[in-house]
Image (cartoon, rainbow, N blue to C red; front, side, top):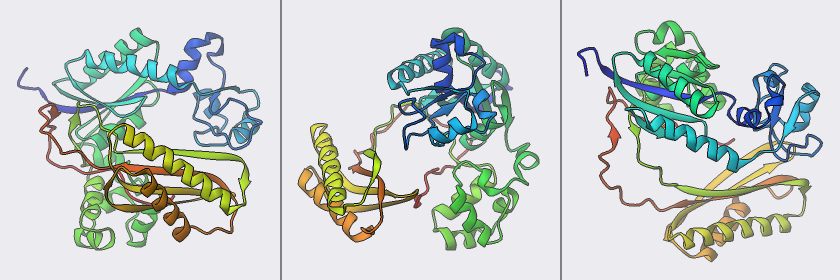
Length: 372
């Protein structure tokens, strides 16, 4: 360690990950538009794009788009089915490479990870990570360098694809100040709309907003957190311990809309029973159950209810899910998707010595409750 060393957070983001894995397995597809999603059949209804290669994105193909729409925008694209085991294996190889560096590694998904590092040259570290990932897996990645998870994550977006970008307090306002609040990680369209109602339209305005006004509108926890985001703050801890799942969910999209509410009830009851039985088998008591209904053509409602205390009784979970369905959803509209999620009772938090302390004390959650 030298006197110039300081703490950094790096965000490693694999480029077009699912499509890149498929191209590695099928080199003849390199340079062609590739779309991965569902069964890979763009003639089937209600299957969506999981990832599109950059060549496909040039035609306007985006994640979450129906495969049918993707085929209309890019008829010459190669459509492939999702292969979860292949992506999990590729991700595991990447994460093992990241752990070979003298950094703390927090896995953030198949294709993302945060690194906590103490170094005088974070760009050199980032370049080393890129080279090692490419040599070990054939995949490319972008690395964002920041002084919080927020800045590192946003920096990776500026570095796409396969680049390195630094975003810190030093260049926060020149880079982000005039951008809309919705450009911040953690602020979606509905939240941005509510901020606009307060006259807060840009990042710099959010960072200078009245804390009391924000707390009054969004609550004593979310309000201050939003102001921190506007200032480039946020979570600075990189947690290396494996994440313990806090919930488990399952959903089904139907080839044809359900119009019989008795069938809807039966489907919800079955999903709730299955999830509760799995949780009981794992020894995880449950405390909440949520129901998700997507009406035709594409309006989604999500409602959650407490179980009144930890329980391992699948029948109680089923009853609660049906109460949520009966009391909080309209039965007179066609349904295209149903989902149920159960939340586990939190385990007692043990002391964890493997936490990257980070360069600052600001912290916050990026999850905001909302109806989608």
